[in-house]
Length: 436
Image (tube, rainbow, N blue to C red; front, side, top):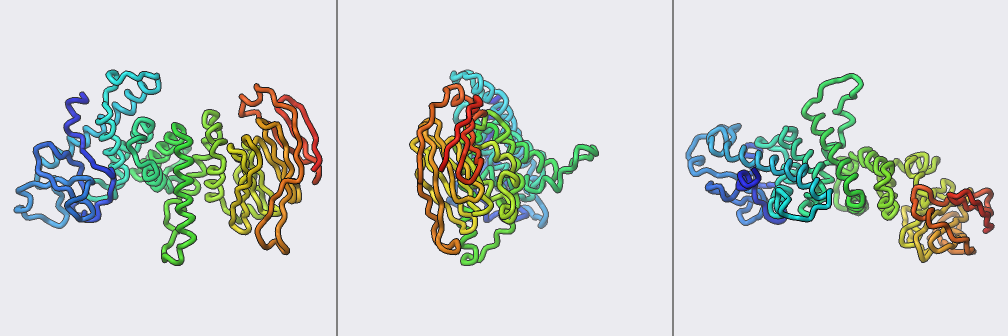
């Protein structure tokens, strides 16, 4: 079956996706195969040398009179047949790869002879699916069509198979763009209302996004964090560049990103990766939540899932958030001044940290290093100037049993009983008090 349809798979060069700047609304971009015996032109951004999606051209088409709303397949049945063959081949190979080859990969089978799609076909299918997901709406491929929804679904189902051949950040942003209005379009299942094409596309994009995040939590977190860093850089220079970010995808999809992050935190298999990338997770959360809420309420109330991590502490009095990292450092977010500091704290991963009630002292603990440290944070007069965080005292602690280290769901906690005294709570019930 794969051999019979492999000849119809469109062949895309690198980069795999480029917007067709020279394609108007009346002659949309078409999926074509460069070796089906049909003459083709490579048209990318209005040029003729680019490597992008190829557009079907027929010798007799130029001599035929066309109306402004006419499409190529209206005049040339062979072009429509070729397009149908190509889309059928893409979806067919996508289904085979996402359902059959992916199961082979999950079962640990390394024999390539057992895989229906080879490396080359997997690459071409992945690029064609990505093209179908990201290509701008046109007369040939409108925005909310069964073909586009099928491609979105297959991208999500077989992401681990397609990932090496995709531009992950573009795919994630495209899915976020489509799912950002899901709350508006997708009806509640309570009333059993029918799905419109727009709502079905939003729902499919949301499910694909969740499937990608579950399959590759680290890839999702790092990719979104990088895009948010680019967004923040653009926001800093927005006035100079004269750009508005109100309609940016990362502005409109904040609720959807938080929803996916909340699902990942609730998934036990993704929790260890989330701990390793905790700084990126906090960057994403701080981008999505309303900072006005953080002036009066701690982060644990604004976004409750963050309570899962004992390495995150927020002081509303000083408007600082401290995050312990896997590398042993401590990242300090100054919300009032919009600054971030990276402070070396331990020689092993930070297991827990906590601000005292007035926010002037901070305690950090590393179970692998068997060390607990107190930190004092001070600023200049009237809260101006760079905050200075220095270690004031350190204690050696008793080693934690290996069973505790192996179970990340039960990690030690730090609880302040007064402004000067903190209690270290171990999962086995042991409590030890320390004074700063």
